[in-house]
Amino acid sequence: MSESHIACPTCGKQVPLSQDERTKSFPFCSDRCRTVDLGGWSDEKFVIKGKELNVEQEED
Ligand SMILES: [Zn+2]
Image (cartoon, rainbow, N blue to C red):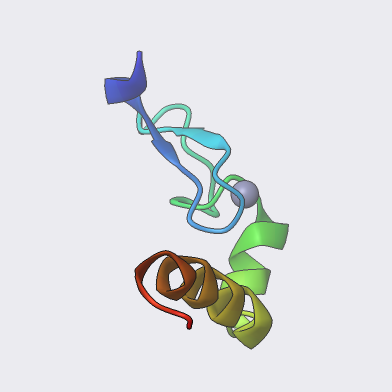
């Protein structure tokens, strides 16, 4: 099942790969997610993600 879908780069929602099912916003699940991505990733999100990874490795 996962082979026929991919995760929306913005929210992780399952997006159908089938050309019949894929939206105009592909590979995003919706135009909203596409806009979010085009508008520039939230720096905060990236920082938070990086922090989480770094926290495990060092910090202190
Ligand atoms: Zn999405």
